[in-house]
Length: 145
Length: 425
Image (tube, rainbow over all chains, first blue to last red; front, side, top):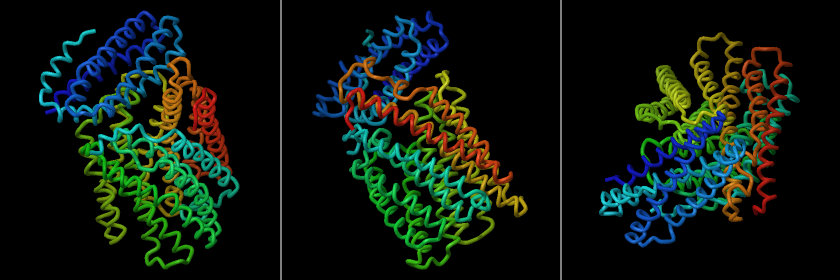
């Protein structure tokens, strides 16, 4: 059973694609598109974090008793990514492509090494540990904001 | 359970000290090549060529790969290498002393240098091998995606132990029954089993990650899971038995595997979603093209008459080591070092993104691009050098030296930015 892994990995891919669209638009100087794609990226990354922090992580911690372990590392990395996204938002508002691209490079590395750890370690652990994975996935799908 | 450690990897200092020493060996190799003149162009078994080869394989590639593995296994396999600080010091001191000693020992045939090199290189590699073995044994299995890292993890000790045996044999510490056979095993397991297979294992992880490409197709990873070990096995049996049929088998499997890997990676990169110019991508593409070219050259070696064959063997080595391996390693350094500098700086200071230098402010893209151009020039001038007048090679070596210097300055710039904003090493 790997419902959690599949569901959240797809969510990662969705965010990766939005990231590439936003970055490509900034690089091409198409700010109208960049504003739109960046807003979608920021919203959907936050939604992904909410799915994990509000639903998956608490359930995982309650089930396994691992409170200070992997989930706390993941929360810290979410915070780094939120910070970076906010700094990027300021560069979008200021039409500062150079700083945006320096920050986006940083965000990409943060995101992808973070995702790798989640997809290869945390999600499979969650799939193994949680008896009600399908219910959790359904609850995560309801998160919209 | 290994995955539960969930380690963040070692401190920045552990990999960084290895990354910073590595370009010095690239410069040393280039300067030594200029000073040695046409000695090294006389053939791959010439003392000068052997000395230069080891400055690049041990000093440059070896140091970077040690640093990168200390960092990477924690993320990729969920299993950190234990004692990263101690291993990194062993690597720095052992490679720092052992590589020039080995080069001098090979060049001058000086037993004292070879014995000292043997000791220093044992310090560099034996603890490192133990650490990697522990990490691999604790890692969760990721199936086809992980096996190249595991195969490389097997090839590294074979390379190191055959190398130590050869150094001791050349120094007269013991007798080596079949010196030529052992040299072939050492070179084959080192270049193919360790370098190429490791790059395959790393590529599976980082190519989709860096450029947002699709994952490697299952049929590719499955084919490579057979071809690459089969090539290594057939090559080993060929060296041990001398059966000509095995030569064709190893050529088909190893050469086929290399070409499949190069073609699959270039195709994936073509399908990337991330479209912006990226120096790491360009280093990879150069490296993959050089890999394909060196494979074709390898396949054609037997058809060449003798003087041309000796030159082609040297070209092959230059294409593989500088064109392929060094290019990929350069490209990776331009992602790993600025990212680690940013990541550790942010974690240590708690500074908000935007108030500390981002990755492109850690290492300027234009400066990295200058290094890329010098590296392209070095590869294009050096790969055909064995067929051309000897003085032409000096231009390629100059480009290599300046490129190595540029890389060193770029890595130092990331370190300086890290320290300037309050990072602690």
